[in-house]
Image (cartoon, rainbow, N blue to C red; front, side, top):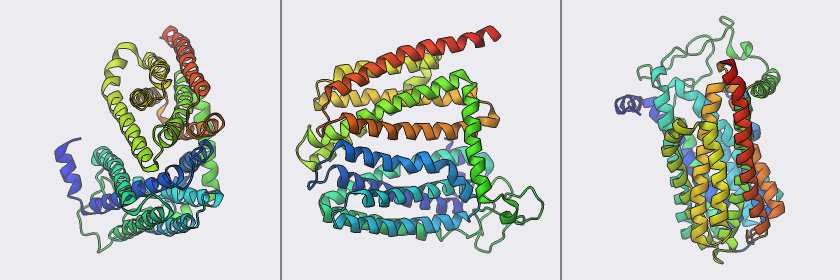
Length: 458
């Protein structure tokens, strides 16, 4: 990331406003998710079960796997500045509703429906942020601006999680304390909406044929291109754009086209199969980790939450390590070879560190699985970028995004059927170990066969 380029980006007033809106919302996301996790998994008043964990994971992932591809249909029809204003306000109201459910001791279907809507609304907010960025940054600065905004947004979300943990220590981990944390999150969501009002209303598009002018926007042009135009001359955007029903049909047909294209690219299909397979198994281990932290490693709910946070931090260190070593390893043994090694390493690490069911050993296993997860993802991302035609790349990555989250949600249902409340399930863990080992062998053999026709053609 170039320092000079970043300084120029940060000098843009409207970029700073958009960026501040992102930070305020993602900080609040961290607070909200800690409150949710504390109430569902680490509340002193209730026992955590695999079924509840599975329901919570499914609710969390459903907006990302089901709503993600369709968010753009509406983002291109509604004023994006208004989306950035009203979605935080709507989320604040919904979070207060969820807080009321917590006060009433509700943790069933109505509670999870409220959480689902809060998270679903966020998909529109995040999509609007991405679509708005080219309107406040020059085209040749987009890569740097996007990397900076997304990376720091992730960091601020972790900061929000830390803030949520501090609020839990202050207010307590019971229903009253959780409701107060949620009320604080509602106030922070309102702050994000207020920050969005500092952006000129028509700055972020979508634009009609004429370029909007506003006395509010006194900055020099920050976008690298003129406002978006319609392909039908001077017709307004609302008239030129297809109806929402047609656009939704286009999304569905695009997903089908992406899936069909993948089937004709064997390396890409195998890569997607590998990461879907890994996510299915990894989700079982993650829920097992949560249950162990809550009901086995400690009897205290707050201590269990602290232990789970440590496990996530150790796993995050594994992600970082994978980012450092993967490029060098891939240059030596190829991406399919590294994926096969990683799946095999997952089997070995779980066999060594998992079966004792001790906290230090499990932490070592969490680090190893962090390396596996990020290493596989980096290889799969690159494989798709290299093997998929550019005209299909967006549709293929939409399929990838859905598979990435849907298989993880499916693993939650699998975990609910396999795991006891304390997370110790020897047969389930042995089954995961065997599956990883067999998967490594099968993937390596299939990837080798897929390369032979390519070599012959060359």
